[in-house]
Length: 194
Image (cartoon, rainbow, N blue to C red; front, top):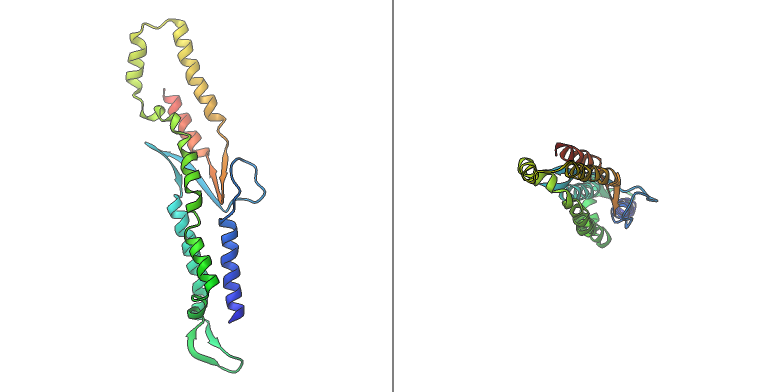
């Protein structure tokens, strides 16, 4: 029993250590984040794929799988199998196992606010997909623009494209590695449409 309990507990703790990693912000990291997540533009929102809900579901599924390993192992003593009761019954009642499973159940919750704040930094580009290109063009042309006005307007769009290219390719928050490549491609396509 103690060997199975130790193996179960160690497995759950190892996942908790990786998922509960406090590595945050930026491109450089000492330990690779546990989850690679794509940041994408799903008009009208900037989203993560997979979502935090999906990631938490995967962690929960992994925890259940680790626990269920002991369902087929009967309790035995040195001389015989005891009553056919699986070890799962005892393992699932262990206080340390229960505590670790509960901590894993809410493990992504700690990063939720940071992820939300990071995704909100891209709201400044929402005019690229929310704005009406034809109305903007008509309003610009109604001012009877000079050549200098055209140059300034073109420079504005070139500056936006340059700013988009400077978005770091990866941003780490805890156990999540947020990869911005798909978002940058979508933003560039939207900027080029203007």
